[in-house]
Amino acid sequence: MIRFTVAALLILSFSVQVGCGRGTTRLNEEERQRMRITATRYESANWQVRRSAIRELASYKIREAEAVLVKALDDSHTLVRVEALEGLEKTENVTARRRIRALAEYERNNNVRWQAIRVLRGFRDPRDAVVFAKGLSIDDWLIREESIKGLLSIDDFAIKYVSVPYILQALEDSSINVRIAAIENLSVRDERIYAALAAMLDDEVMTKHSLLKALLKALNGYKLDGLTLKRATSLLVHQNTEIRVLALRLVKRDRELKKNDD
Image (tube, rainbow, N blue to C red; front, side):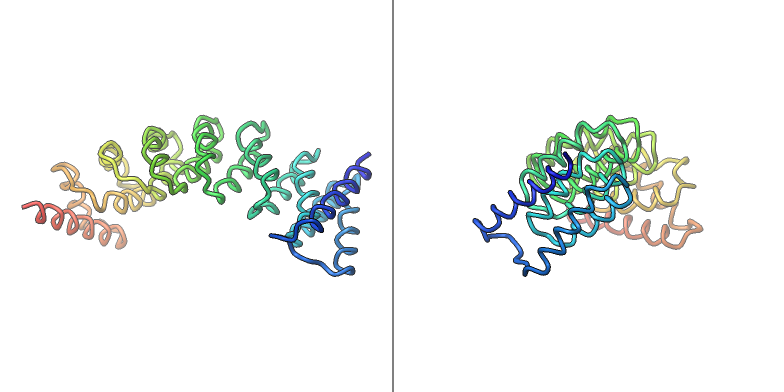
């Protein structure tokens, strides 16, 4: 049954390709035959053989090969499905993107879901914002981390505006990795975000250098309140050179902004 399905996909995809040359890659007969042999390997009962076949098919970048990759999104083995997702990273195939979106939103296997969200992030499609927002409530912090990156990658004014509550949620996440991902990928300036960032610049963060560096970069461009300015100034003598430099830039930028207001 699997062999019949893969063969049918190849025939159908080839028919479509012949009928519509736009956006396709032309293969000579030798290349097409080699690809079909590779596709046949996907029929193997051995998941490692199937995974190898999918990896090779991903290099062809034509509809015939993509049809098998989309089929592999439902494979019985997690690593084969992950391989198929990686192979579809830059696809423009509407059906493929729809399947990837469904996996990113509903897939129960966290490894597959994480990979689907990562691939979806690369499309930067405003329609996927709700998928990323849902991902911020998943127990797995890796999924939450990738979800906030995906949400903040969307360059759409309306999405940026409605994303603020989700950004604030990520800034309060229990995982420091999720918080750092949110801070490092910020593309929105908002007083609510400033308040959250400033509140994080406390005594506890002073020993968490990665988080501290991210905060100093994110705060640059805001006019600092008195307490935040005091804390930033105290970092001018920090033992870490990069933190001292970032603190100096932040203080100087704050001075410039306030001077312009006078």
